[in-house]
Image 1 (cartoon, helix red, strand yellow):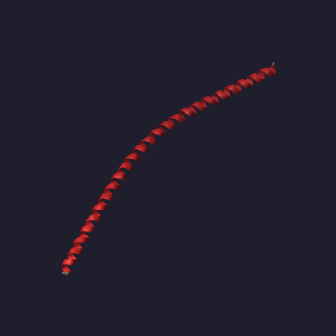
Image 2: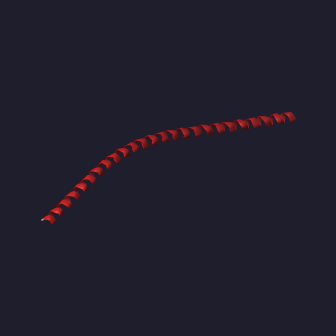
Image 3: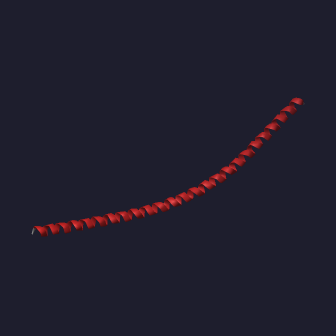
Length: 91
């Protein structure tokens, strides 16, 4: 009788262990799915960041060219102003 109750208890514990292992297995599978979707999102984000960085570099290079042109115009306008002031002083 004692042996039968021990066997029943062991069977019950084995069943509980199997159920908990199935729950853990399902949880791991769900976690893997979440990690896969997160990885895809990060790859997409990284690709978007790369293209945005390339575009920002392009805009910056265009802006630096524009800045050189603006400094050249400022220098020319200053030279013209100085020439006009000298012309007024001479005449």
